[in-house]
Image 1 (spheres, rainbow, N blue to C red):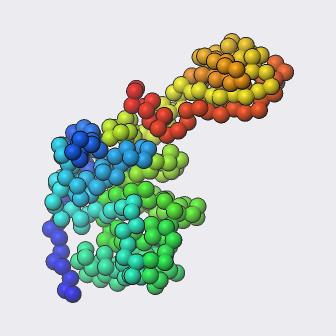
Image 2 (image 1 turned 180 degrees about the vertical axis):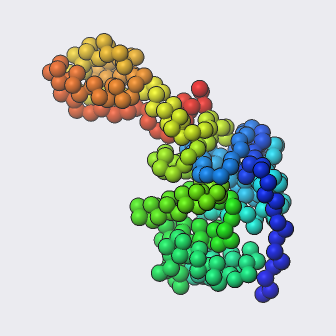
Image 3 (image 1 turned 135 degrees about the horizontal axis):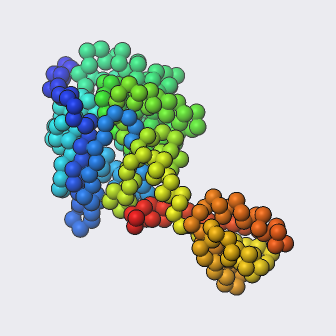
Amino acid sequence: MPAPPPPTAVPAGPAAAIEVAKVSKWYGNVVAVNDISFTLGAGITGLLGPNGAGKSTMLHMLSGFLRPSAGSVRVLGQSAWKNPAIYAQVGLVPEREAVYPFLTGWEFVRLSARLQGLPDPDAAARRAIAEVDLASAQDRPTGGYSKGMKQRVKIAAAIVHDPRILVLDEPFNGADPRQRLHMMAMLRRMAAEGRTIVFSSHILEEVERLAEDVLVIVSGRLAASGDFREIRRLMIDRPHTFNVRSSDNRRLAAVLVGVPAVTGVDLEDTRLSVRSSDFGALTRALAPLAREAGVSLFEVLPADESLESVFSYLVKR
């Protein structure tokens, strides 16, 4: 089949790579994204939030596959919706498998190169497959790939045309530790070359290891944005509750009442709940205090460490 004509060039210019202005997306009475605004330039930005928060909806709007119900999404100065010209500069890695199981890895990536109208799709496919460390499996049908391998072949297809913007939805799902480190190193290198990379994750540690900036989305709303270290500080410094089991909860409770980091103690039957404003100070002090009081600690468990509780706290701030 003849190669398609090259897409219309997207102008560069000083504008931000991605501009999202008061964007909402709803399906009937269900609001998936609610009045979100942000701008992104070169570097790596993590889109963080619990499952169902609206991250995938936002990424699909950034990629031009979904039309905002309100507001605007601009990519490299142009509207993303119904604008095929931006696809020459954008690579998308969706969360779903999105591979043709009857194609080999080589055929799948080469197809993407041909659809982009590249002058040498074979060479481009070879480079992209090598970039994601998949050359040894490139001649096998993708239907037999592991989840981690499918993720890598999707990334190869997304970067085959050397896009300026890369959008990845949960890109590390199924990747083993070695593959994860390899992909993180590749993304850091691409960002250092001036590309804009946005990736979503519901795993705090993934974002912490890779992202320079973070957007926290909860229930379709932008709960926090900015430098990851500052967002992390807000998460750590929030109020915490611990459930404690010990050999003498009553004696331990009496000791903890006078600790500056403790804001409250609840004692009910065999259950001791301790509230603290300083996670680190309490966890460091708890064992020495129990030992001095002659109390044995059996269990200390955070009662509110789910991502949902962390993000809900950020929303309330």
